[in-house]
Image 1: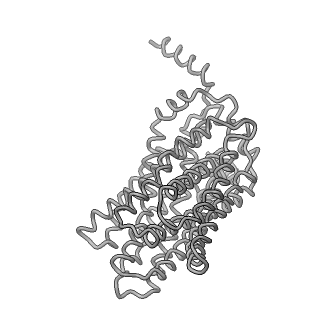
Image 2: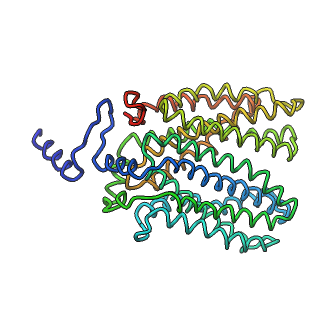
Image 3: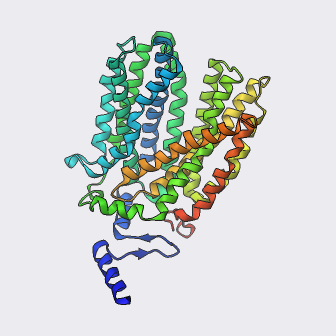
Amino acid sequence: MKNLFNQKQLLFIMENGKPEKKENDSKTTFPKEELAQKIKRKIWKDVYIRVVAIFYFFQGFYQAGEALYITKFLTDFAGFEYDRIALITTLVNIPLFLKMFIGLISDRVPLGKLGRRRPYILIGSLAYIPIFTYMSTLKDYNPTWLILLVSGKFAWVLVDCTLDALTVDITPLEKMGKLQGSGAGGRMFGMAVSTLVISSIGSAVGWDKAILTIGIIGAMQMVGAIFLKESEELYKEPSPLTKVLKKTFSSPRYWYGFIFAAVFISLGGVYNLGTAYLKKDLGVSDLKLGYVAFIFGLTAALGAVISGFMCDKYGTKKVVKFLSISHWILILPWIFVRNDSSAFLVYLSAATIGLSYGALRPPTYRISMELCPPEIEGFMFSTLMSFANIGDFAIAVQIVGLFTNYIHITYAFYTLIPMAIIAVLILPKLDVWEPDKSKDGKNGK
């Protein structure tokens, strides 16, 4: 029996290379993964952090602008009821369900010497211009409008998932927190600015001009293809796909990662219901809601940048544990928001929840980056983000919504505390990177 085991072990080493165990690290790392980290450090430039921030600013601007336009068009121009609006919104977002497969195409199908990421980012970014130019000429709802909007969403998915994968390709472990902090911060800031700019353009000079602005800003995401570089070595002679997928999904670490992405990010889902509470129960005006969204976006951007920096400096584990406690303190002002509350309290609540909402993103994204094997980065990161979206828009909303039948909605936000506990308990199973203080934090354990 022992000889049989030795033969199987020898065969495994011949096929995959001899595993190397790093000191003080329970995770087995294979030579190809070590090579990937060496290549990342070789091609990495600190300026990429700013490039990613600019890219996600444009993306956030586009996302918020598109959402405003769809709401405006379907309610004011088309005059649809809520049931039809819900159906059209679902149809428009169909490309989101294809994200992981688009990521997989990017992983495995490079476009010649152009690379496997940058060409897709460029194609998707340029597609916005004809789509939104044509859309700006449409004044009434028709199938062409829907097809154009779905095409725009597909372009967004193509750009988003390939840029995400490219950041995994090029970012060393010790830089992932700063990069994700700048990216999340840039997106939140872009959304805050867009909320004011697009609505102002639409009101002042017409929504056809606002639509063109959204398309132009969307096209500016091509900065990710122009200024970020990729290495051919990272995808040269890839292993069989089935072998990589089997190795990945047979490891409990990745399944714990899916759970973590869903439960930890769900804590920020309170904002999704908080705005509905302000609008539906308190009757807050659209103008004041615009200010709430702007303040929220600014503090969320600040929270993301600070959190990303802290992840790299002190370690993601410590940041997750800190946020699992501080989040409940930061959302305390929501408890006191009622019909007779001052505008100051409403804005303060938006600011504090925004700070926490933004801070929750970098640890989740950073851990997701670490859980992406070198040969299926796009597929894996998109899959992890799908679980994060489930936590953000399904778990949080359903749990809080259920308890609103028994307690006030502002108290119901605290029913998500078990999600924070689960996230902390899962942390040791993820074996995340930690800074090595003995080497000035430049390498990790």
